[in-house]
Length: 263
Length: 164
Image 1: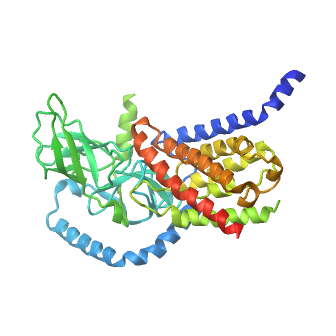
Image 2: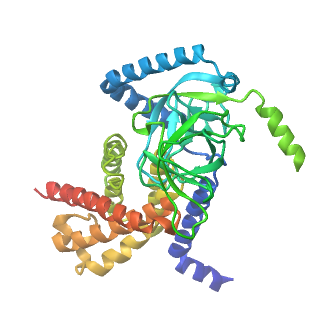
Image 3: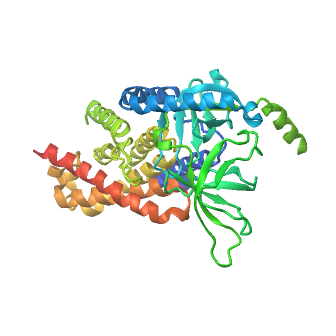
């Protein structure tokens, strides 16, 4: 027993090192297990508040472009009133003008913090859009703030369809350019042209059908490949993201109950 | 050792880190983590275990700001674990290591070696753990080299300024 204690004391530095590293790696794997929520993040009140203050100050520098954006949004909304299509009718917005208080666009796993939280009824897994198109999905909800994963994250796997023929495909992001994403699972027999519009499929309860995702920029099909390699220009400009809307599916609980009943 | 001075420096450096250096978005590959300055310049009068605990807390605080739970923590613990061994290997005159790590105490050559090696290890660990996949290895190496260059310049600059 005494010998064991001696050995433990002698190597205590190394043992403490190993114990601390194990703790760190546990935290990393917990945090990487998307979509499980993380304990500590910018959804934390103090950190989010501090980011909100920064955004409050820097907000003044982009007033002009924000005004333009608001004007464009107004025009788009008027258009919608005149040409209500049935799919959009089902969209219920939980809140219309959540402000993005913090966002990264240049990392492999980007995230954004918005100033709405559980007190506004936000829940994990709800969709976020703006007037341009799809933005992302809520990941962690705090009381007043939430953290979301944008489309430009290597975690992204969004179910989409081509507007022209309803062909279903999946959108992923390769971590390189915040303007472009990639479409996968498009078979070789499908004809893809630059300029084709990609919209949400409506197959998952997160986003309603028909929200713009992007426009095909280029597509290549190598000899012997069974899938196209497609580059999509995203509708949403993540560099200038300021205000977003949270989508609420009125049938979410019902759909979840149905899916849980399957198991 | 003057704890208030150490803590004050940590607060100022963290403010710079979060308000200025985290906002930099240069070509997507430049994320200097200058907060390691506080860990590198910590005097080596404490037990090794305590040093590693300090590293773990500094990393965890940075992680909360970055939404990268555990990544900075792992890198900082590694940095604090290697630190005394590395110092022992590159500083010949052990007497000089009694309290402060500074340009005056250990000289330019040893300081450069010390800062470059530890910053490279720390940044490489942070970026590879954040990527969490071999797929991005080229990107991670580029990110490490560019970001480390800036961090190293700032740490050396800080020491040169104090020397005057």
